[in-house]
Length: 120
Image (cartoon, rainbow, N blue to C red; front, side):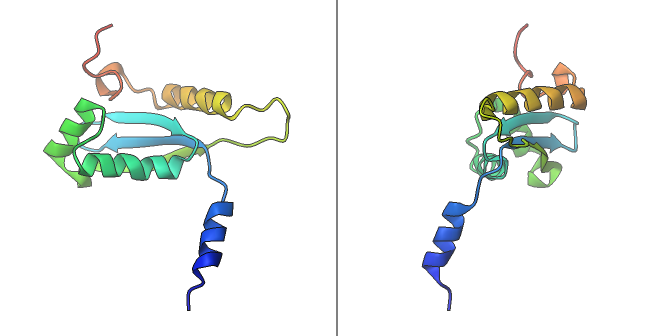
């Protein structure tokens, strides 16, 4: 017998993990790198939005419709390391980590879903 109260309590006690994630198009090499205070939940949300045709990034939504779900890889790239330092700011740490990964992946503008279709 499943103890629903225990499952709910365990779920509520689980700490979310802030991190950086990527959505990669394996057909044309385009990529979206982003961050969230709950990286795995963000991946799940993005996948659901794409399946429903409701993702906010038009070029990503169009590629999903053209190439299908099997053309995409969703992955967590890195997680924020929490510190006990009183000056620790999760949002700042996450933004810095996202910036580092955007540099690391070295994605030119024409392959970056955030920059496709944007004028300089």
